[in-house]
Image (cartoon, rainbow, N blue to C red; front, side, top):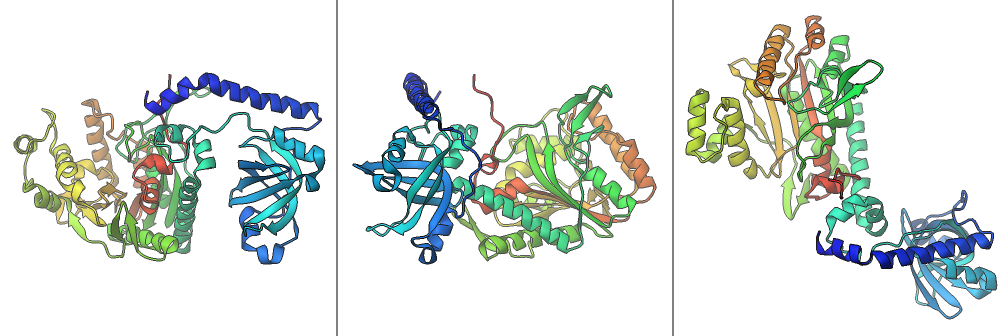
Amino acid sequence: MNEQHMDYADDRDELNELMQVRRDKLQDLYDLGIDPFGEKFERTHTAQEIIDGFDNLENEETKISGRIMSMRTHGKASFADLMDHTGRIQLYFRVNSLGEEGYALLQKLDIGDILGITGKIFRTRRGEISVEVLDLKFLSKSLRPLPEKWHGLKDVDLRYRQRYVDLIVNPGVREVFETRSKIIQSMRSFLSDRGYFEVETPTLHVIAGGASARPFTTHHNALDMDLYLRIAPELYLKRLLVGGFDRVFEIGKMFRNEGISTKHNPEFTMCELYMAYGDASDMMKITEEIYAHIAQELVGSTKIVFQGQEIDLTPPWPRKPMLDAIEEYSGVDLRGLDDSQARQVAKEKGLQVEPNALYSQILDEFFDVFVEPNLIQPIFITDHPVEVSPLAKRKKDNPSLTDRFEPFIVTWEVANGFTELNDPIDQEQRFRQQVAQRDLGDDEAHMMDEDYIRALEHGMPPAGGLGIGIDRMVMLFTDSPSIRDVLLFPHMRPRS
């Protein structure tokens, strides 16, 4: 328990006393015949609308609503700051406007209460645009005070757990999620304008497929069968290509039973799209175009700043084969090695590898350790081994590699795409290799999907496919170093 939590625990008795005071005020309101949790309130303006339109609204009557964030009393006049979703505005209370009984109600008011205000718009002698309160209605009595010293609070764990309070007192947090919404809207319009049709595919899967990941399992009682939360929508979306859809996309939640980090959350949002008669080069083009398009809409430029460093998203982005990148940054050429030779080279470079590690696994380890930390500016890493790309088409000039790419920005993999494998015989063989790996203990390997093979046997056109991680995209555009900063309610270990 850190210092902030200790303070919170030590002040529990005091907190309960403060909460009791608020409950006493609650009872007082009931005794006065006032409902502390009021009814619908028809507002005519927001705080920002009053400020922006003051020249035309001065001396006009207004109805506004929001939360009281501060109060100041000066004899028979009082001031308060009211906050709504657009910002803050000052309220002015005085006996002459409210009457003795109305003004006495301020004694029942606490910071955090939500009010409906009827008042007159004016400017104080100090020049602050304000609303003189003519009538107030309690819309929701706040029974729990905000934590003290919340502004600048360094206990981010508490902020993530109590996001509702974080949103109340830290307006900048709301901006992150407003930007997130704009990013998703921009992506939808970008794809729709280019003929992509948005669809919805199942979240509960009989077979976990479409990615290499450990799934979450659940049980359907009526059918008495286990199901998996989807790790990817890929295999369903490509079934639609078989059925005649040329361009499809889906934006939705994925679920992977993996570790939690600044870049990983067990549930995350992804956009997957598929283009019939296309290939990986089309998907690389659309990836860089989407990023550039969203940057232009958000900041008016394809250059953004992340953690103090300028990132240039201007297309085209460079391309580099995976093995070339490994050789460049590690000084080791891994081409043509078998599993045993690769393990020996890895040990010589100081990498910790399992005694039975495969060549493809060692390749991933080399890439993670030596290459990723250097990939700051946007770049496509291409030509991944077939063993780690079971759904991608082989390269014609080198069947041991696939026509697959992963774009990296600020060291993060931000998407994954490839030319889709549409040969049902090759696909079935690769599924069987994946099943063999599962039998050896790799619980992230693909399962056999017989129905998907059946679909391919009906004929799927050549296609390009792409999956873009929405959360990491939002992190980049909001200058957020942790994925928890861009999730309203990130997963947290429960406190005892």
